[in-house]
Amino acid sequence: MLNVGVLGAGHLGKIHLKLLQESKKFNLKGFFDPSRAHAEKVHEEFGYPIFNSIDDLIEAVDVIDIVTPTVNHFECAQKAILNGKHIFIEKPITTTVSEAEELRDLVKQQGVRGQVGHVERFNPAFTAVKDKIDNPMFIETHRLAEFNPRGTDVPVVLDLMIHDIDIILSVVDSPVKAVHASGVAVISDTPDIANARLEFDNGCVANLTASRISLKNMRKSRFFQKDAYISVDFLEKKSEVVKMKDVPENPDEFAMILQNAEGVKKQIYFENPNIENNNAILDELETFADAIHQDATPIVSLHQGTEALRIAQRIIDNF
Image (cartoon, rainbow, N blue to C red):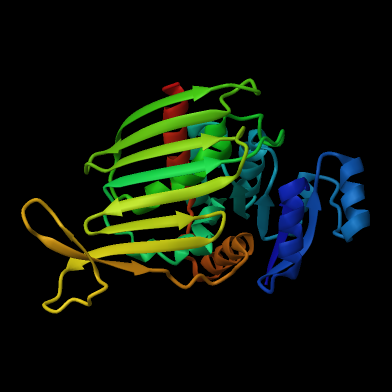
């Protein structure tokens, strides 16, 4: 088992603490939070050991789980890596691309592993269909949330849209050649609603919408590719695959058949993949443990986290 410590005991930090304590792949040594009063409250409620400083926690563990505000990510991660510790770091990886690049290079120099908490990669609705997404040429995503003051210290692109940016970059094997975007600040000092259009070298186009001032929650993505349409509902954990194939010689009388202007006929088939329920946060943490033991590249590497941040920053710069 890997000895692990958590930096930050806020809303998400407490979830990580609970899951790490339950995990059979980690031995939770404790946590550090800069607010002593809050740390003692968490300790009294759950019993997790408190460390007096970041340095003390780093010294006691193999892995540091960074669940602090984004502004503190770089400093915490840098210190942990330079002390030879593996790091799990929540998204977005850092506040700037240059900081992310430095961490990405630093883990290689120090011979440790790093993973970024892009948790939607582990959503069962996505994992059920990701192998069916093959060279998509148009992608549309909507990530809408009811207003919550938590997270409004950063633009909605870094708070919400970056999830979809990471998913898109994981399935489109081509560089982004152009970014068009618009964003509006409604309640916060930074944009609360944003739309972005990404154009890739291979011709793929992705249209992303994110809002944190909606009246309902929605997290849906649609992938269009040759002879197939795939939809993923990250919130409801449902997915659907619609395929078009050549019409057989003797189609079923109830078959759904389309014919284009050239007379080519296609039959439509619907698939509803089996969705296996999971805890995505636990999965991302435990697959990181596997990557460390196997000396393998984590599922969401620091390089991938850096590239997601790079595109997010290009979107913000286009507002």
